[in-house]
Length: 123
Image (cartoon, rainbow, N blue to C red; front, side, top):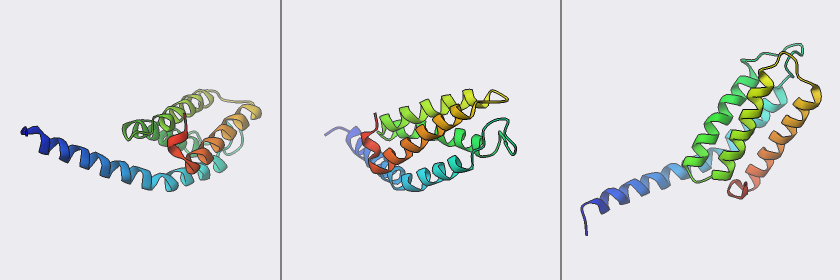
């Protein structure tokens, strides 16, 4: 037995604990994403606030992308990163066609539904 085994065991036990916490928070995280999706107004529309729901959505997707990959949900994180990048592009314009926003929101809603069914199955 080497001196590193207890430290390794502690590390992996802690990582498993954090993974469980991450997985336990997924329903509330995806619930919040769904709520923000419903509040999202297209860029240039009356009431559009780039720092409002769109800003929070982008920040949450960014955090989710990194955290998901860290805790073994690679597909979940990869898809979050793609959604975040597309949102960043959409937010860069003063006006975006309604169809573009609808397509992005539909993809976000599909992502949320798939993640709630089985987050490990996302590719």
